Image 1 (cartoon, one colour):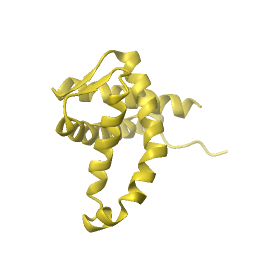
Image 2 (image 1 turned 135 degrees about the vertical axis):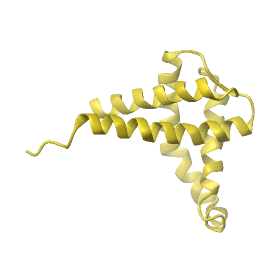
Image 3 (image 1 turned 90 degrees about the horizontal axis):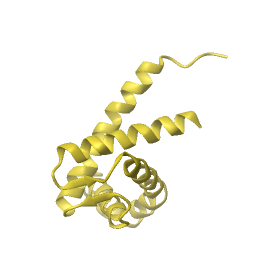
Length: 121
């Protein structure tokens, strides 16, 4: 449960960083960022695999690069729910999803490095 909360906070902070640096992505508040991070995690867990399966020929043809478009679609879909995230256009959603993935990865790496190696039982 603690791991889940840490990951949620990391994703919310990453979302705030994305909104700060990209002019087309806006987050209302830190609370909104936490809610958006939670909803985005749910969408990525449920809808993203379905979209990948439905677009599998295109994903294979583009050697997996089409998954970046799928990430942007998921990001734009969450923004359309009006829960504190707004995105100006698809280009902003594409860049926002890309930068969010990179920033979230870097922050997660920093958090896991700060925790140290897992304890042996």
